[in-house]
Every structure is written in structure tokens, then in C-alpha cells.
Amino acid sequence: MENQGPVLTLAFRAVLAVLGLCHFGPTRAEGPLRDDALVAEIPRLLEQYSRQGDFQLPSLSVSDLDRVAAGEAIVGVFHEPTQSPTEQVDPTQLVGWQVVRAPRLLVWLSILGGSEESSARLNHVVLIRRTAGAYVSYHHMDLPWPFKDRQWTLLCEKNLSLAEDSHDVIWEHRWSLLPRDDALLETAYERGLIHGLTRRALGDSVYLRANRGAWILFDLGASGTLVAASMDVDFGGHIPDTIVRSFAKHQLRTFLESLSALRGAHYTETPLIHDGRGLPITREAAITAARFQPNQPWLAKASAATEH
Image (cartoon, rainbow, N blue to C red; front, top):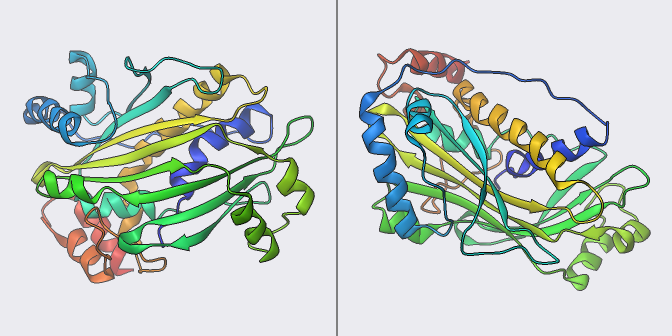
């Protein structure tokens, strides 16, 4: 089953940083030279996604498009014009883009198969496995006093219709917050699925008000992969949203930049990851992707890492 750590820990790292629990420094990755062909291709792909996808992504300015095409990670905050804030939820998205000079399969594996990074403060477990790589997961975040702990349940799935409608050009891994289900949470507690979870913590932890997002990967052929991210997380309570978003933007940018390390080259099918069509990915497929176009410098590095 896919590892949800890279998807979920970005904003939660920010919360921990705000609370003084940890610090994360920037780790910039080397980017490719600007590809003029991508300046024309990227807007076309984003426009295609706007017609066929579930999320609304902002249009890139000319300067931002140049930066993305040159291999720079771009991250920003986007307010959907069709929605307005309520007392419960401020519909603000954290969005990001990055071109990675690598086959989409390796980038996909690098996103969904990264290290878990769970700790005594942040844990999750898959409660229900469904077909085509979909699953329901429970998450618990331990916060220091005077903040209450947070908990949430997510539905994570591949957008199969998008892969089909785009003729396999666009893959999307998306997640959404499920309504609080006390029976499901009680079952998780009784089965001892979350390490250290007490009945008091189960009852007192605040359930998140919003958690929705997606990783969207566009196949650029020989030019590599365009990665788009869209995330909307509302912790509720008294954690300042502006501070959390500031740190979360930094963490998303750092994660996007780290994708050029191609962690997916080490894929071993443990856990098993499904592609954007909902099909299981074999280790052989990852090895083949790492050896494709051997004249590319990044590929030689990925192939060597896979063989080791």
C-alpha cells in the first residue's frame, strides 16, 4: 500500500515547527536548464487538466512559467474564486509546480513511496484497503500543551477517469477528509492500530476541519515530468493559519526540489504502489524506467542507484 507520509507530513511539519518542536532547513536540488518547448507545453497541459481534473489550479504568470520551465519549484497560495470562507473552513489552497527531468513512473514512485517519517507525535495506519490502490487511513497527531491533539480519517485514491480521459497523459493521486466516524475510530482503538493511542486521546483529539489535495503528474515524454500539487488543510483551533501556511510553503518547495533525487529508483514493491490507472507497479517496471534514455545524466545516476 502506498506510503502517505510525503503527502501528509508537509503541513504537519509546519505545525510542529511553529510550536518549536523541530526545524527544517532548505535543501535545494540542482535544476535543469530552461527548455523553451516547455513554455508552450505547460500551459496546454494545465488547461487540459482544468477541463478534465477535479481541482482548480491557478494560471501561471509569464515569469513563473519561465521559472518552472527552467526547473525551479514554484509554490504559492491560491483562493478559489468560486468559494468563500465560512466559520468552519477557509478554502485556501497551497499549490506548487516542479519539472523533474525523469520518467513519470520514477517521480510517481518517489512521491508515494518516500520514507514514512511517522514518530511518537505523528502516526497513521491504513484501516481499509480498496481496489485500484485506494484506501482509508486514520491519522493522529500529538501536540504539546496547551494545544489539543488532532486526528483525521482520509480517503486516498487514484483518479482513474482522469487517466483515461487524458489518454494516460495525466496521473493524479488525491485524498479527501472523511466525516468523523466514531464507530470506525472505536474499532481502530480496540484493535490497537495506533501506537500509544489511549481512549482519552481518542475522545479529546480535535478532528480536522479540512484536508483535501492531490499530486498531479503530467507526462512530458523525453522532457521528463511536470508535477503539480494542491493541498488544503485546516487544523482548526488556535494555531495561526498564516504562520502554518508560511512554513508549509517552505516544506512543499523543499519536497518538490528533492524529487530530482529519484527515490523511486529504489522501489522494491514493499509497500506495493499503484500507478495513475490503478494498476500495481512492479519492481521491473521501475528498473526499466530508470534505464530508459541512458544518455540522460540524471538517468545514469538513477540506474546506478537501482542496481545497488
